[in-house]
Image 1 (cartoon, rainbow, N blue to C red):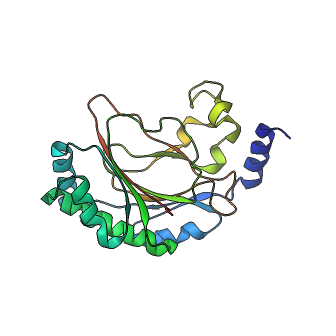
Image 2: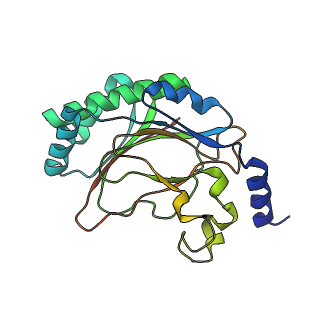
Length: 225
């Protein structure tokens, strides 16, 4: 069986058993342990104080990215070292510390791999699947991550299977309206291909296109050794 045939078989086998779960509180996150769930979304409205802090941070920060190994206790110290100990960074660090605490508690891990990035172009512009167990993602400012429901994806068109065609033309997406998008402030858990029994069913997603002059502040948390 060829690789394309294998992907098609996996896609057929997993159809209609992978879906999204969405809710207005972080109590939605334990649903990520359900086999049929490959994205859990906390539909969060960011507090005004956090929104203001993010705006100030984007205006003043000269560092565009921090990649850190953190736990709940050292988030502030590490972000102060990576950026500056300003009032804006303090507010952002308060929020990130809560997300790190939740992420580590949910998965029974001591540390998380943190990446906080100011983006001025799409980081991963093509739809793809990550070879990881699970990732937390949130956009503090700007347009947020786009993703596809499992049943609406032809996985044989991922990667080189697209034959050099854009995602919207390659046959990857069954219908254009199948493209879903997180809102700014939403916090989502995305299953990857390394989650148990998830091969061929990791969430397909991509970075959204950014307009000229537009910026995006993106946080991701990952499992780390």
